[in-house]
Image (cartoon, rainbow, N blue to C red; front, side, top):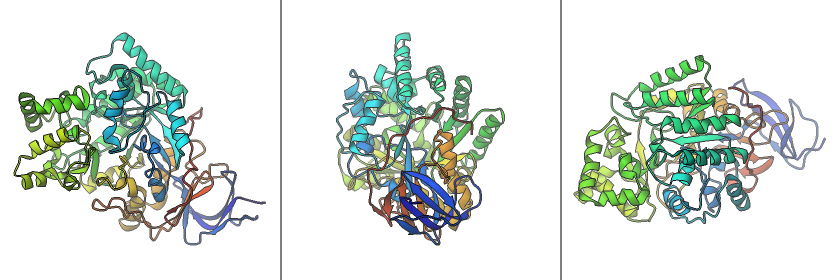
Length: 542
């Protein structure tokens, strides 16, 4: 029999968690056609993978690549670390829906997510956005959610109020249309404006529509600090339970490097296990780093962000309001996520600047910048937000390695990067966008023995595919899509660091996307093998 490609002498880890086995794999028409111990047949392309491991392509369970799909030069970075599928539109932010009334606001709000890149925003719906991305060409397979914050903004702009009955109807219509057009579920980011102004009932109402289409609820919870995470987890579980949507908790952690925060994650996971024991389907994702990254504006109270970037910068330039913002950051640790108090200015670094301001600040923490300037670090924070129109990205230390590992090794955890793309030559993005998956396999499997290779691959592939209902992905089995990674288990490791975040990983030999060889020894050969995936009926509980 003729195959498009034959992979010989491979050590296969199939994504189920079961032990590796030796096999040969025949690829045909974008699928895994045959798996045998010794494969008969021929192919114009035969690969001898002696000493290598072959797995299904890695699934980034938490990606912020929504806009980078449309930006040249950013689309293939994750491909080099074996990612063949990305679940996008996370934390309540999706590139759709976009209403004509608030199109300009959407463009300004998203500026910080892709510094220095201008996009046309000439789409409104998921279908139109998918058409734009497909026209640009897709490196990976894409699994879209629909963002609650984006839905709210399409109807209410950045208003902090509760929706009227008609506004709620409009939000429901946007969600229903998105689900009909191929969204896999609803995401929320309940610490970010405007979603942070919503109550549980609003989110639950939208989740009920998602449940009608067999979708899931993916949430960046309302709080991740030690004072807020218990109530936030209760809210997430109750929304899931009442609406009938399976729950995926985004980047599970307890933010803080104080003694009060350390070790708290074990109790949080115990509550997740208890919810599962009651019959609720709950999982979470995490990344293999102790630092996180998000918008710098997240450091100020939510009320100060009313009116979006313009409202925040105006508030910071008003003497009395600026003083009130300072007081809240200095004293309030219960009504909002106060990361300055949880982590400290010395743990918060500038990752990128939207206006390409003083690049000497990039990679440096707020405390050291303040010392150099002879200023108070709070004033440095406020002034950067004003100068950058609230568009700066930060990277900050948020937990210990022990706490990170508690989540990383747990069997309910998927792997995601949570990476915010940054154009080449700009800023210092978080290295997780370039090294997460090889870091798990190199540092935490091979070097630290924190989990087995088979279990790590299950979390990166089979478990993620099942959670999002991808019936033909995530496993090395006959009939599955030929998304495959070939790597050297003795060499694989992340190369990206906080000082050099764009360094490519080592040990990734080959990457196939839909049967096409996309990466060979770190070189991207095929940039257009991906596609938008569509939800499949009959998703099974995980």
